[in-house]
Amino acid sequence: MAELDKMDVSILRALQQNGRMSNADLAAKVGLSPSACSRRLDHLEKSGIISGYHARLSNTALDYKMMVIVHISLSGQFAKTLAEFEAAVKKCPNVLVCYLMSGEYDYILRVAAKDLADYERIHRDWLSALPHVVKINSSFALREIIDKPNVGL
Image (cartoon, rainbow, N blue to C red):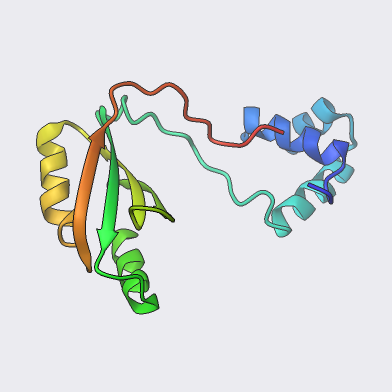
């Protein structure tokens, strides 16, 4: 955050609210000329602060009504073991998030499923087939309270 000034933060806040706004609208919203706004936006993109633009889809509207938090333990934490697991888990279409963890479990995943039968299929065909997995612990989310796409600025 040290390299961001107030104008950069204003641009980022505006884009978090509406990532589809035109450069002219963004410039007007933050009080810059379109060319100055474009230069700042280009810098934010090239520096990696803005990592991309995407549509935020509704899992529920797409009939993925079940969110499952999956804790996974591997047979070891050798570099090759972790790399093989991570390469395989990236191919799982229903895995939305995967974190390497400290503590009791090696990884925590957030998995979207249509229903219990769909999760059973995902567990059987994908999660159980991941390399080096020795333990899978699944918890089913009862209700989503908050799911922020970005940190507060």
